[in-house]
Image (cartoon, rainbow, N blue to C red; front, side):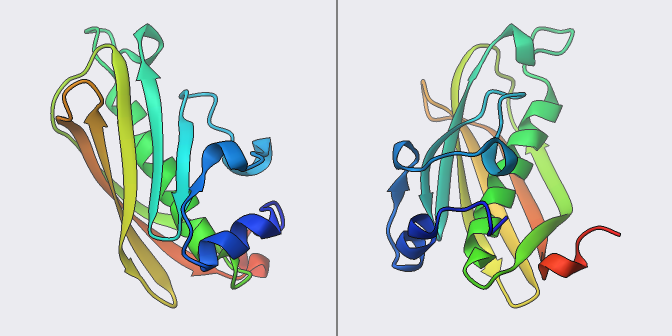
Length: 157
């Protein structure tokens, strides 16, 4: 992913700056999230924020947001956070595990996702993602994603 990231973004993140998503040119290859409707809000080396406006397209047959949406949000936000964290080293990261708990049902309206690191090491990273309802701040899902840091030539076959 590092070849697709603007160098100014990496420099700003390494300097400890929080960068609003509106200042980042998002490429479909690295950040596209149109399938689930995820919208990026901010990028920082220790915190990534995004949101989804949930509706019928996200529902399972009982009319609530499908758990797979929460898993996808957790995976995507944590993966981008991890990728940004190691991009300045010329590395990529790949998912090793995703554990997502569904805390309460949600039907309609905005939810906010916040990813923060629990551990960023030489070989692996562990990120937690909290998804909360924007209307009342109550949590709807919580997840953890473990990522393996790899060199670009280690990906693929």
